[in-house]
Image 1 (cartoon, one colour):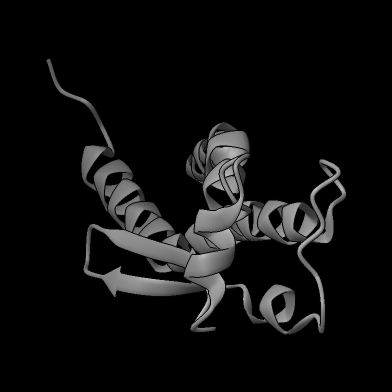
Image 2 (tube, helix red, strand yellow):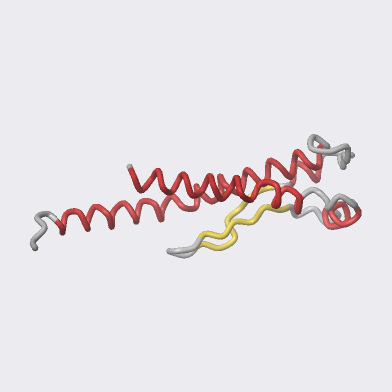
Length: 123
């Protein structure tokens, strides 16, 4: 059996995979921002009657950033650098604002990442 043009097909697949690898940081960050948005909603009291805002400093400090990036792995982190955030998270009997955001939005973020990567492959 001989397939004509297989070298060109393999080269195109390789180029596509390289492009997707380059886009993974952006895709992962966008997935993480879904969790970030939910954490900000939680701290604002939009998803429950627990409102944690006094100055808005904690809510405004929640962000998404790349924690680790290699050629095959992108790890993102959703969090805050505000020192009192751990106390706000721990004192709330409903589980705080960040942990619920992860549990509530993890599937949505992973689905987004999977759909986006699949769409990139098909292009």
